[in-house]
Length: 334
Image (cartoon, rainbow, N blue to C red; front, side):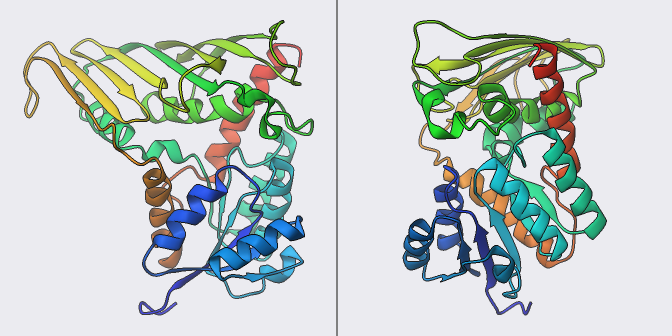
């Protein structure tokens, strides 16, 4: 593609809740054109095509022949897996909605197809682009905390979203943990690596609206010699992401990270430039969460156009997360 031309992007599936955020930032991005749309729901596809001035395709395989620079895949998890297989076969680079497929077997097939085709495949774990996460990673990587020994975390779904169709698809491996905790698991790996052991307990609650999957979960992970404990709440009163947090405890400092709105609280036993001893606190209550999508897609586009591999969550990383999630469910007899 010429440096003076716009990147032509297509959407395979437009029904996922994250579609609006990703499509919105792409539509506002200089040098990008939303050129093509396909969705099995013809009425929805037509509405999206009209909104963005994009050509609609009744068949996904025809969209993949339209000379696009990359596609963003935003359907149900079952649709996402099928679209990803088609994109891999057509060798069209893709940003694939997380967790990437409806279950581990389907995710493994996507990973195998993408690797065989040597096609760019990044999975949409966009919370890693929160400014708080980016800054916290720098603090950890530069050794401000000393040796990290323990960690805590919390994530949640806002009530009553567990009854929403996106958490109730019987084709999915699960709900709360498979579709929401997967984000937190991805974030934990950025700081601590892949877990070596995991203990989990799921609960199905009485007296709440009916839905097919778990209502809450508690975890203990071992990352090498670091123990991390946390929970995932399915009926939280606060708005989406507002209570999500990670706490890292080291021999020289403590780090508390709020995912959104982004917040970083750092405690150091001894001053180390540029931070003083004691607490340094920062937050940005006005941060627009769609900017995390923008950072994700901007970096993916840059790397696609120069022929580089993903710097975000590539398909092999997503597969490893899927294997851990599947093991958590199996440990509960599910």
